[in-house]
Image (cartoon, rainbow, N blue to C red; front, side, top):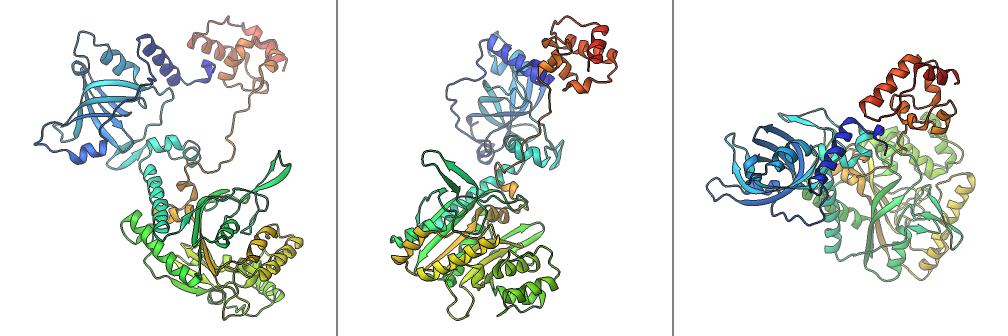
Length: 575
């Protein structure tokens, strides 16, 4: 990397790096550094009346106060921060004081990793700290961290730009309080979910991510190509059809926690790749699954928050079972006044017009129209957990017909905080009915619905061998974590959410500048001065440009031969 592409701080840090090496100190040692304590444990276990505890800790330098022969630093490890008291004569007991005077005071920077050996004590100000007896350089940081200062619980100079935070999550985790806690809670959500399913005796499995048919849901897939087989494959949009094959194969219950991919929009609650848990259990129905789900979520909430409640955007949501259960057509009637029971596709299309819904088009079938009405007028109103049940058959191509309500299916969606969290069925196990449902989906595809399901002949073949009565559910893990941690955007619960490509400053190639008679060595200097393209130099005052580039040559000690003002004038005249 050209020195002119670096900031002054980066140049200083690289010089310090070279100086450390010249002193015989490896800034990136290979050996294990043995620690025996974390900052949080040291503070929690400290007792004033006990013999001072000997500790070995490691972490980043996050702040520093140098006061001559004695200094204080704040060290951040994986659990938290602790103050360290460092004196010259303690870490340099002999005649050579370079480790303190040169290395610690001058060559180490905020963000560097060091190891500290010493004993724990309480300062006169009452702060539990470590008195350092030995300091070891563990890793040099050559890019300065943004420094967020905290006073009385208030953050100053915050690193808070969302795009920067998501793009550089590694920095976000280091400097912003509470970010790591969100992801530790996410781990607790997944661990508790897995524990509940394992305790119930169900088997965790893995099914293909690359699939020849994107089945199991209505969504637009990502397409890729397998060179050896010379076929197109899809990143899975759901795990459903493979998990049901395993129920056919004789498993009592199977579940998978994994990534699904949908080539659709991005917003505060949608990411193109997302984590989902799908569970299928033989001999159960959707009523059993509602009972199981509300107990599962109650237990997860207690594990994460210590109680059955979570606060999201100022709203307190209770996950204590049981939850309200409401048929979807009753929900639509409750919110719009229209009773859609027994209505045809054309009658429902007319209702949409009367409700002044502008997004409706001719490709939408009866199920899609009902879904649009529910989405616009009902979905956002259910803040407390609510099971929306008994969906029309047109909306549910993989669901068993309702045992007592003609035209409806045994399906529920769990709504929380105005969004779908889970989708579940009494699974359709009639192979002939399933084939007809698939054919209806193909008719929708022919009308232009690019989210309609494709017929999966192998899945139909599996059903023909016989699948026992089964209930299944899919739960969106990312949305579940949002609810449990009080976050309002999905990006806050994903370490690395999908982002638009990073904007890069457009720069002309050196050859374009050389066409004007500019020596190649001067191109980085001109670009450092802010003239990233030849066009940027047009109409610039030659004396100003001359002054800018000669100043950079001097400042960075590049030792290039300065051009004359006449040379610069000729460059500009050629543009």
